[in-house]
Length: 313
Ligand SMILES: Nc1ncnc2c1ncn2[C@@H]1O[C@H](COP(=O)(O)OP(=O)(O)O)[C@@H](O)[C@H]1O
Ligand SMILES: [Mg+2]
Image (cartoon, rainbow, N blue to C red):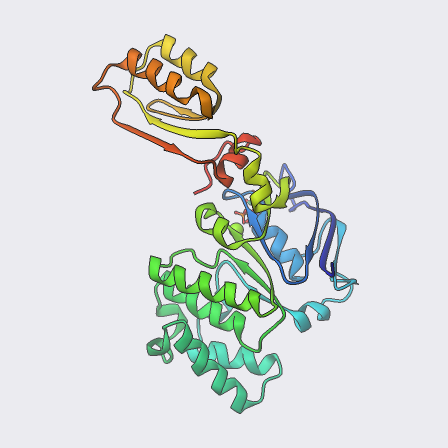
């Protein structure tokens, strides 16, 4: 296995913050994988990828890219990595085409090559009609696609994408995921940040789940999901006021992940599902149950089980 990034005990304290935004984070990213960093808002994902990109210095710990320390040698990042930032602040005053073209030139393309790649990328992402528009005037989803085109120009071997599908409509999301998968199949290493677990689950090879600055779990997607595989997820919409006996029953039924006033989300052993549903139905009567979903386990369940309290999506 050839290592692209080696991240060792990275901690980031923002001045004045009570808790670290990244707390002793350690993992490696191998060449050719799609690595997903998942976690709720505020988990520390953007802080981490800004450090991977050399835009922010770790308070302590060490990040190497192809064996070279990125803090001491930020040029290695520029050479190998393209970051799609969470918001494209630097591009706002350019047109979409200028943003892609200039970035291509900065990354060493000739004018002719930059022009050709700009046209090809805008067409590929379905935004050629936006070429002459100032980025500032575009919608959130359009900005996101332009910033992806900027990231992809001049073809860096390592892509870091911070919430690449936020604000995109379903068709654009599909286009982006499909294209990322294609780029990966052609050999690019991709690190992507998302809180959209359901979608990411289909694309990523390996996952780091983060919350409160800590890496809560790390492993291949399938392996993390297997941790909850012998169980089923019950998502039950309850009447606003349930009786204490029902609360007790739900608490005993399995791992209770969410219990709000009118909602219970549980992980229940497969062979207990029927009993639990029967017992719930007995307590609340035939009209009490307004919605019930039974699902196979997902990455989100793993995350919730590991102590994540905030919902991911
Ligand atoms: N520039 C900054 N200065 C101070 N605190 C920050 C800064 N950027 C982020 N934070 C804080 O660090 C934590 C992690 O933020 P962030 O890395 O943006 O999380 P995520 O990308 O997972 O939503 C949050 O508590 C956030 O408020
Ligand atoms: Mg973020």
